[in-house]
Length: 338
Image (cartoon, rainbow, N blue to C red; front, side, top):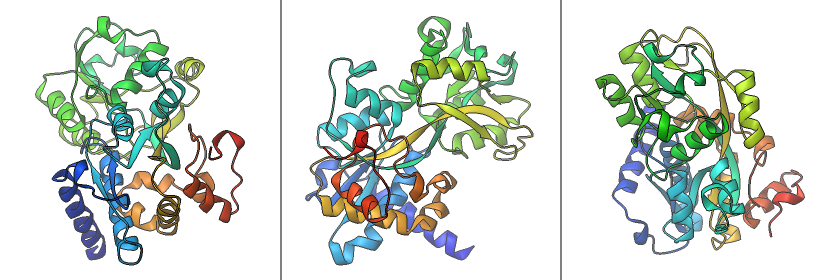
């Protein structure tokens, strides 16, 4: 217990340092900034853990450090990589795919200023509403909701994934609800205060904001909406990156039933101008120290070397590819370094 507390406090201290640091303060390619998302989700603590691990293991011998900073999420992170405001970033597969290929919000304007390092964990959809509005208990309850619903911060991966899913299901959020643009913890607080009736909170479970909702309101007053097989199939027709994910009973306080939701992968991205050696060492460090990441957030328990390149939406950085080749992992042509 003491060991875990020590690790947590160490990671937290790195996180506070990151929030005080501006990307421009990174003076060299080996003093890396990792763009994450808001502090109430999964991106931020995992980013802090990766940064802390990198600094602990690589600073002394290789002069490589990494510091996580919070952001609005995937949408902003793509721009930060393009603008050289961050060296690395955690991205949703949807945003990485659309940005690199010039689709969706990036239609005819592709952004290719990033490469893949590794898959991280599944970004699990938590479409949550006050129980009185959960008539069917499925995502169909968002149709004609007519109430205030937080779709996520503007430009975030949260907003992007929420809009993509709703569009695939024929739901027009601009017409069928009143949108609010809140991050995770403020969304949960607004639901508890009765200022909104629901929120879009995709992240690796357990999510702090959802835990707060279940603890404060109980399962009788709050509901994470299910996706039926038919609804999942409809989403997959437009976006094959989403798959079934079951949040087992007991993950959240008082949660008595499994939640039948969906998920898409998250991945660690890096600018192509970060050196091959640096990315090689970071990739190697991550996979030789997975237990450290697991001790910080349960979502990282989904990480395994044999799954490291599964579903990556953009080509690998040469440094990451070098490590995987050494470990005997066959790299598909679609994601081989360019």
